[in-house]
Length: 414
Image (tube, rainbow, N blue to C red):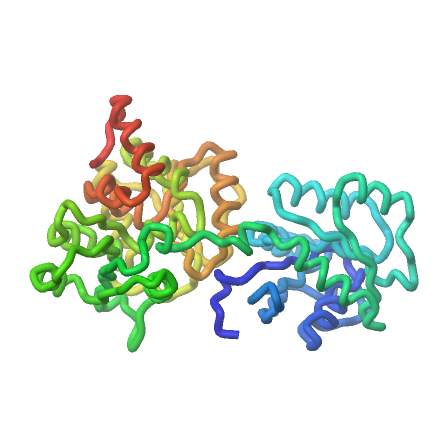
């Protein structure tokens, strides 16, 4: 139950009002997670239920409002449901046997996002699905099962279908750092303890990176940036890699020998939670910013900003220095993301340790469709500080994108 949401397979339940989405969720989790009522539109905001779904592992079920909701309030509920699309790894379209534009539009939406879909015909004991519809789903290779949640029928088949249709990229999830190191390697993790460090603990990306080092049977030396130079003097062998908090890039780069790879936790998470190549290209757009341009800063977690906050003060300060004048910044938190991106010249996403990979990839897809460059905190900071090439050295594909930009004569920061 303590597994972070970002490590869970997100399973979204979608469909019309009163088709039994909440009943199905309660039945499969064996808990009264969602309110069940004969009144249509009982579910308003998305309801989340984390659980251990063996043998798949940790998952997050998300029950949503009906896509056929009505009225001004209904439109708001539908808008909330649509935000769940962006973070859904496996979509469950629930029908009570009826099939029309609502269900087909859901299938088309998830097909356009390359999200696997499972159709569930709930209440099949009351209204069996049309045999012709089943034939069409089979022809389209869309899996389906029939259930009766109140009677507990078809639940084993539903659970098995979830396992069978889980996306491969979740089962074979990318590594944070494990593919960059070998067993027996030494990795230095530089973790500043400053006013932004949470009291008594370290932040999630640092913990998860440390765990991946241990899973790789490598060793980790954890220290603050003030101890790095002395550590290099005393180490009997060179570390394979130094990973630092992005805010300490300058000092860590100065104290790390040039023959040792150095990158940032946020750069690692650019790859782990998104697409490093796309976000590398996005960082190159920083040089095209001009005073007055609008920049979107997206934070996946909700926190109370403090003085010199990384996303609200430091990054804007560095970007404005590169642009040569004031920029207009818009900050969003959590799952909020503007539907219209056309007015932005750059989107800067945090490391997304509290979100899942699908949500970041969805945001990347939307930005690319709108022609808006997309990057993340660590890459933007490295670029602004002139440490971009250094931070990309462990990643050949991303480094080649940078080198091609240099070779083409594009003005870029080193």
